[in-house]
Length: 347
Image (cartoon, rainbow, N blue to C red; front, side, top):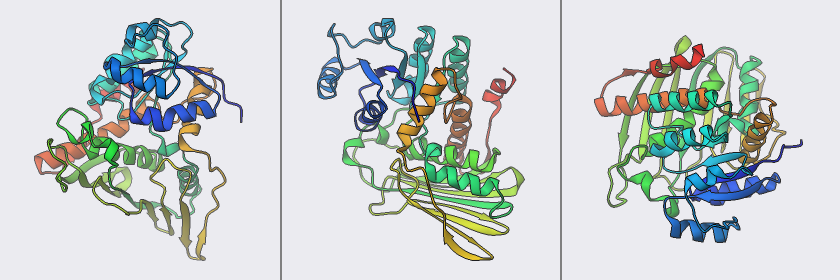
């Protein structure tokens, strides 16, 4: 499968850019040609380690966006900065691949999507899980009626947060915490799996580990009702070493249990249980989730197809995460509010 080549500029000298996205870009034959970061010393070290050219010695976003040789930007700065940076990139005519969550509130998500549409550039959001061959296989089973009508979905998205990531995610700034980091990923999986929207959420969040300064939650359990009376349970945690991840889908004619699939790695197994018994489902596509995400984004930028997750999809996932936080903080069941992004559906 041929992937159109893109020349990238990076906005944010982040861990995910270094450990995941730059390697994936280069596996696909893409060029990484520039870097913008608010910390020039950190950016210089990052650029040197990752062999990113920087002829001017400057790492400002203006210089990056002025470079006519750059086709697209990958934004992996902190969540609160996504709107400003994506809007500037769109105004400069650059396609935008933004880290998740797309923004810290739905109004910002709507404005970002609208800005990219107004300037005729592609907006993709790096929710990588829906791209995985395992998740696509599960969606195909559900779509084909392998388990009948879906009644419930369980997601276990639990691990121990790596030491190198124990920074802003555990602090007090907008977008910190396990819900904005992992629950929005869960929603990006469940939403297309069911093909419907969440109606209401009830959640509990806690801080289970003494990480030092900061108050962000590191574990969350959420119960949601989706359209059609489908019940969804999500368990997200930064605190559980050696814990498996899992996606379970229960229907009125069978069930699907997918072990080890809430990860970017091309791994995991799918077991289908129905009246005929239990059997493993073959997963034919074992490409890395970031490779698939980049392939679809590059194709969309070339005018073919669409990103795996676009701005509207990402806003729907964000709406679920925000409802979970609202429920936990208010200690009540709350509706999932899509009203700030409904304008996107009429444009």
